[in-house]
Length: 224
Image 1 (cartoon, rainbow, N blue to C red):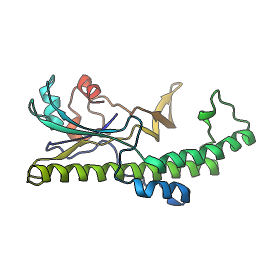
Image 2: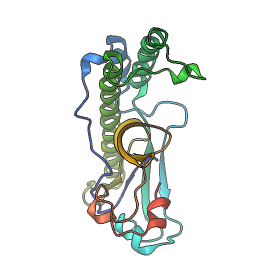
Image 3: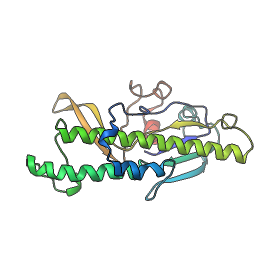
């Protein structure tokens, strides 16, 4: 899912705005050095900032709930991540986990699936470092959102508030989260890694912000 910011009145976000389990001591000095000058930047790959125009509204109720109210409305979509800091956190962890896999006799069919037991010291260090990278990514998106708002305000000689520039949603799509799921007929606590995707909930689910809970099932999937 992409991080979307829009000229709308809706101010809710999907998910928390930071991870409490982050620990900067699990981020290497080199990762911090890489990340410091990159704050507020997009990066390469498939990251982008795009100024969009609403061309068609297929579900007026769902669109209005998300602050999209009329054709021709201007939106800004920002897709970015944790930049060099997050990349280095992953690289550092990969080196550690490859050693752990040999020690604990863990086998995978791809080197990039390197892992460690969740409750091991190495597993916990990784989760704390990953959470720190996620927090960096949130701040990075927030910084670019601020810059986009300021650019529009300068161009139109107005203020972001007068232009009604508010966030529709902000969500991570490369992250591991502790979740409750049914497995083999039993409810279990699992650590779920998602790459390039995010969790989707049905209507009325308690983890969906109240304003979104009554949006019908199909609309909830269309906003991914």
